Image (spheres, one colour):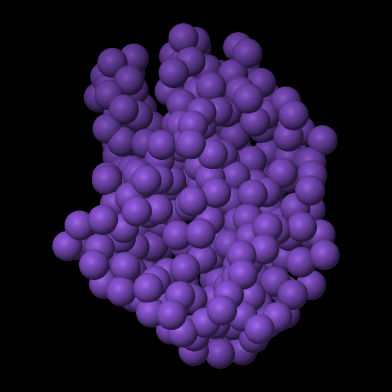
Length: 297
């Protein structure tokens, strides 16, 4: 069996440059997500032919692997994973970005993989400058919300730091109360991942900030790089009773993302109609299609 190890904070320095170099903009390959969601995914990794391979344990103890498609040893890597899957008595399942994943699997293993693409897990990719400028008629409503917020509230943007974390968690607690987190397993899981990430914001090198009005926090957000040209926004939370709070934190954080990151990944919508509508309303440059490939003998 291949030796996989759990992902710890100590692995950040090793994994981040290697995952970034693979060039996949998939939010699942952000180290922040790999670490903070490990309680749910049981994420682990192994180095096979100098390539980091990520392993997740999904529902019903099913195993799925994420393999960087740029590896020159990709066929040999998949052959090793096929052997491990056979030893477990289950088919090999891979997860990744389409159509590139299907392309190289069909090239190396013609007709042996079946595919399932899931729209609910497509990542929304935006041009960073679009989120900063909010130009054009399609984003006029966003500009209106931002301008109204600026006219209405004397606000300040505060960079994320250790002293800000308790206020972020307090806002998250109130947000959860308003949105019924106690009755939603997915929201409870998000809260757990968020809390873990904020508690280790320094070690994870999160870039984020908060909006305060009259000393009270009304929104916060944070993220981290995924590749050399793509920055991931992992969490945005705001007091929904404050009109424009989501719009202003979105713009203010995008403005502070370093210019080398020409794209911003705002992750998936999980099939939630309201979230899908909100993400589409910001006019993504493209959706990053993702799905599963399952080996059939």
